[in-house]
Image (cartoon, rainbow, N blue to C red; front, side, top):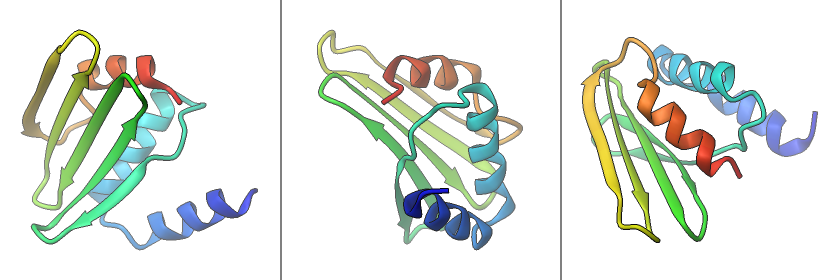
Length: 102
């Protein structure tokens, strides 16, 4: 395992189950996904971000059990997202994340 992946796995061990569930749901759907940029927010949530020159997708896991995701295509101006109970990662978010796959 490379150092970045080892560090990521240690970080995940410290996260609430809602965060782990989200990450492993993404990984199951897109096994070769790159590691996200992560922001541990002051509002009781953790945000995963994947971004490149064209696309951006944020998935924010609220420790209360909600998931908020936001997608932007900078080229076309397409925007979408939702806030919903966290049962699994929303299918639409996974489909869009597969487009970004860095």
